[in-house]
Image: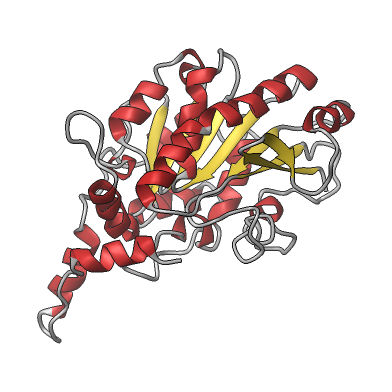
Length: 315
């Protein structure tokens, strides 16, 4: 499988499974065709820990891993290169968020190496949770062109921060899918409480990103799911009221990301923008709908804030 497992450590960038340099490995892959897709995990993972290693879990070898669902390991000529970016995402949420912001420079170095060794190859990024902060921060260190497509899944970053990163030279050169769901409302609210925005109050990017080259996909919107079905993507409806991982565990959704990241001609950004509803459902709408239904059958209160904090702090 054309997959490089690269970790950001206190000693710099290292390959996870070999002492060979990342630059040498990338140079050896220069003759291959297809995009470079960089995958960035979120909170709670740590490459140095067997129990929490992302390369054993979401970046692993089984059929449900990110690499497999993004069509790596098929052996086709245009498979491209997968980069599994590992980083220490354990600790308090505020400390890990600060670490994620600082690691944007490390991710930018990987992008720069890709552009140097394989300048013909488009570079794309997909990131979950606090990995979105890593991905957005990398834009501050890169020229245009660098990354041409990016997918953020339930990103733990702020709307003003994201908009500012998209105004950088590298940010202006990409198309961004900001994927969220009202299933993530509890986590967005907890993130805003535990990691206060710098400066004026702000909201997590689950509320949307104000940029012409970014569009927000709300995965628990029936109209959105029906629109994707007409485009050939049969994405399962939500099955939970609370879930931070549904943006990549929901059946059918990774096929959408795979096509977006691999084939811009088959899935143009503008076609997605025109298909999606103009306005997303407001925060807590999923809970309020369930509570309204519950009034005739019993009491179903909204979860207390303490529940949200415990969910984000769990190890």
